[in-house]
Amino acid sequence: MKHTKVKDLLNSAPGLHEVKAKGWVRTFRNNQFIALNDGSTINNIQCVVDFANTPEETLKRITTGAAVCVVGTLAESQGAGQKVEIQVSKIEILGDSDPEKFPMQPKKHSLEFLRENAHLRIRTNAFGAIMRVRSTLAFAVHQYFQEKGFFYVNTPIITGSDAEGAGEMFKVTALPFDGTPRTEEGKVNYKEDFFGKETNLTVSGQLEGETYAMALGQIYTFGPTFRAENSNTSRHLAEFWMIEPEVAFNNLADNMDLAEDFIKYVIKYTVDKCGDDLKFLEQRLIEEEKSKPQADRSEMALLEKLSFVMDNNFKRVSYTEAIDILKNSKPNKNKKFQYPVDDWGVDLQSEHERFLVEKHFKCPVILFDYPANIKAFYMRLNEDGKTVRAMDILFPGIGEIVGGSQREERYDVLLEKMKALGIDEKELYWYLDTRRFGSAVHSGFGLGFERLVLFVTGMTNIRDVIPFPRTPQNAEF
Image 1 (cartoon, rainbow, N blue to C red):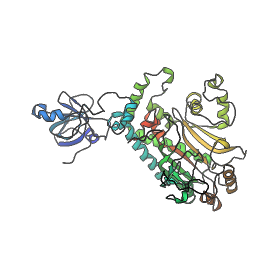
Image 2 (tube, rainbow, N blue to C red; image 1 turned 135 degrees about the vertical axis):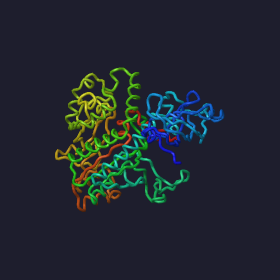
Image 3 (tube, one colour; image 1 turned 180 degrees about the horizontal axis):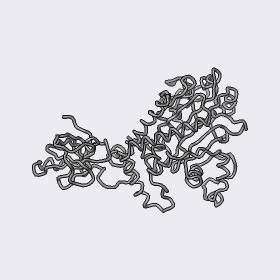
């Protein structure tokens, strides 16, 4: 007999038919009641053991964390909380778990402790819920774009170009660290390296994605990206997943429409599919916030916040208007901002973004038309000569969740911008070619997947929404 998932058993009607279930013991009470979970749902199924007819040796091995197989009758539950339970006729211990050594005991653990045990934290309710939500969100990403006729493109993880121009990249080399070959000038001779040139892990698949959009019309990438940015914060990872659609013939307004529609779709899909997990995470957040001062608590419960994003239009505000709001805001006048806002042209910090979203507009905000000198070289220059057609989407509790732009489609303007920034046109000849042969208006954006998972789950640290976080000084597991 094949075993049935706990999720399906809980949705079945009680009857006299025999069932088999496999999973891990969450708790074992009174030598009789096993709470069994197999990861298919946040809910456990109660398995009632006939302890009088079960060997003492077997009962001792039913411990938290042990893997077991039970066979029995699916009966109407006598206890509250679930309609069915398994009346066990046979139990087999598949894998023992020493209760003295197993770290995931049925009690409250700190998130820091769980990060140190990232290989086992998935056995807890919270992380089971987070990772099921993450999986559902990832599926929704693909479903949205596939339904809209986008093509999925896999852009390189190893690249010779720096899409962001920030230089915070991980080098990829096969050269030995001792005795590295040098040129006559004493520089590293990358011609002797594996690829014959300097290469890095990608920070974005955008540039390559653009080339495909200029032939397939609309594409998206969804893959790992890397930043060697020494930011040890609750919002940054060195390795994270990025969603990057790119659409030919879309202008900035089209790009904003696409991003807003996409975010609302994937959140709705996940709310519809992950009700039990999100209710649990909402309750977890309520409990966590009880220890915070009232002013620091969320104004809305998790599901209410998700509904708010789905049901309301995002507020569209120019960078210039946002600077005026920030300059005249109470925190700025009272010198409460860590980074004061004095003049037009400053790069907005997380505290500014969150003020606009959480205090001023009280809804998601799309900022657009940023100063050219604080944005990447590929963004289209506006007619004023000082701003570019960039847009960022800001979310409560997160700050920037999406960054995008209309791309600079004019060959001569793009070339001038690259020269001004010292970007080697020979290295990016292929990117310039898309402006020489059949150039057209096109736009796209990047969404850091973990920041989306962070928002949907109500978690506050990005290290808790990726299976094995990679951060400065940490590459465990």
